[in-house]
Image 1 (cartoon, rainbow, N blue to C red):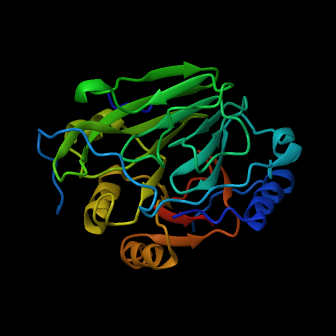
Image 2 (image 1 turned 60 degrees about the vertical axis):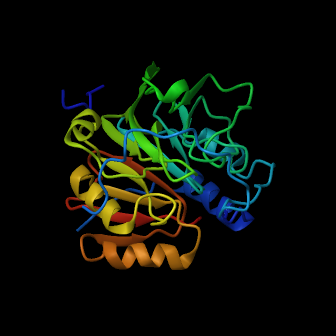
Image 3 (image 1 turned 90 degrees about the vertical axis):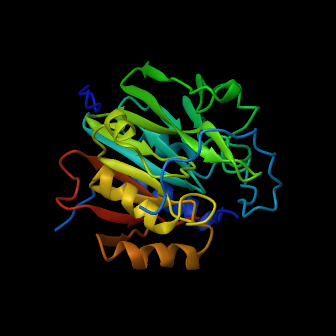
Length: 293
């Protein structure tokens, strides 16, 4: 595998789940294409535990809407399947069917049991203290006493590593290393999930992240980084495929897309799942919006 390093609420509706089934069972969706915020201050106390009234997603049905169809669909050696579960959770699948769930939590869950889960702890819709028993690797993007988490996991045909960032505390200060950007190296692609990013990135962080082919980006513009700051981050990352997340409502998403169209092409996908390969990446950066919240 080529290294990438340079050195509230979701819809939860049956219709969306059925679209994922149809996408996985009958089609391979290929992607084709024709400073306001600086690093946060260095000291703060621990954040308060948030209440579930904060723009959080609703509970998801417990039955398995993916069914056996998704399990039977094989990927080519150069392909990755990315399915948007909702909020900040994606299911990323490798050619060897390793499944990674991002920002794994108790409220928005993949119907398929992941092998690997990543978590951040800005608030409780991005992590859980009670992961399902069958998960093989639970990767927490923070450590105790505001020390940076250091993760570099190789499992079958997948490598998962992290780059720590800071977050705002609920008291208005800074929690050092409270968030991680997770980079998944898979099928010669580098997929980055920005987590609950609260500040723009230093050159050191950009160097540590390395090349990015696909980026999942929070676009709410309030609880995470402001809109202009996030556009600055995306410009710096230069990812060919940009997938919005953490947008809560059509209004919030539209606000981001209005700004994004000044920079990049925008595609509205009909289904919340896409199969990506190095060859199918757009020639110019593109924003792909998947159904969900």
